[in-house]
Picture: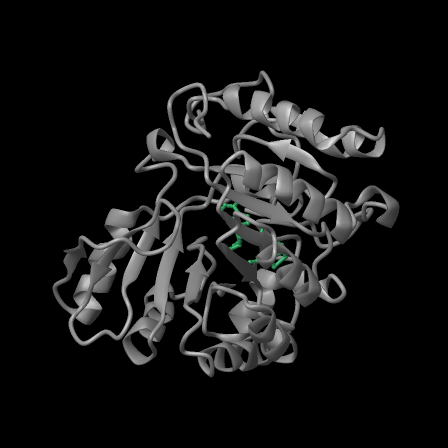
Length: 324
Ligand code: SAM
Ligand code: SF4
């Protein structure tokens, strides 16, 4: 369907849990998190029912996120269930990779259509500082497990965040040596993210050009999202940027989000949307759910205002509760 500004909405990010096995400093506090009660989180049956409603409204692609989606038990059964929903054409996943080596075979068997692996540094000590967990080796095992399925596209997402020794240019090397695209995501001022500076695309491109040589803009399309890409000489994959602040892409936004508690959220920045869990658990039929979701999508905000101080409807959730 189209929203009130004529944008086609065909992509949803579904968060399946607020829990995570890492504690990235820009996403979650180190201590003192009260997890959402299990009973408040949508069951797989509830997610599948809503997915049918979204598919009726024209959603074609689903990205599973979290928290960390792989900490939710038997996530592969949800992948398989979503793949069977008429109208849903693709189910992909974004993960921190800690459990990926363990889960990759089951995800592949369930028909996962792509994996985004979040990896901010290739230095194990810096990784431990950024994520507050010493789990770099597990993540690299996950990376190689995913590479063993060349038919399943693998992308690396890195958020340059000014941590000493992070070395984003070193992360880009993965696209030189392996058939993966590496994307740099600008830090967004949501929750703890607002404490960090973002590194602009232009400054990082200068560093990459000095190290890897002259690049060319890549004109093809990769993936469902707002990334744009560059080719570097001799690289097997592309280098991408998702620059929500410096290259605002709200005009072509194609997405909505469902939180793990069943709130349909229509813009990353705002607490605007509708509580579908409430309707579901009050016994609403599919038509009522469809109407509520459609009405929320029609009211999707025109754009984010991250660079301005907007207090009305400002998102109070942490990124780990939204799913990125
Ligand atoms: N745990 C999974 C992971 O890390 O991929 C899925 C959830 S995580 C919230 C999704 C993505 O959001 C990650 O790539 C993470 O780096 C990114 N992220 C978290 N906080 C952010 C922020 N303030 N600005 C930009 N990206 C952020
Ligand atoms: Fe967990 Fe992902 Fe947030 Fe890191 S970015 S704390 S891995 S949810």
